[in-house]
Length: 103
Picture (cartoon, rainbow, N blue to C red):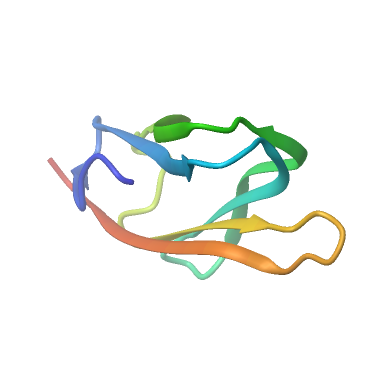
C-alpha cells in the first residue's frame, strides 16, 4: 500500500504491506523491489524465513524514502511478493505504481 500515487521532490514515500493471516503462524519469504524511471530495479526488502504471525490482519510499515533532487523524476513501479520458502511458490503478489514530479 503506497501513501500516494503522485509525489513531488521533498515528499516521503511510505510502503505498508497489508498482511492478512487469519490462520496459524507460517514462515514466508518477503521480497519488495522498485523499478526506477531509468529501468533499474532496486531491492527494497528481502526477508527469508520470516515468521508471519497468526491472526494478523493489518498493514505493516516496510519502507520509507524521502525523495530529493538526487532521485529521478518519472514513473516508478513497486512489486511486493510473499513466497513459500522451500518451493518459492508465489503466495501473494502486489504491484503499485507512482510517479515523482517537481514541486
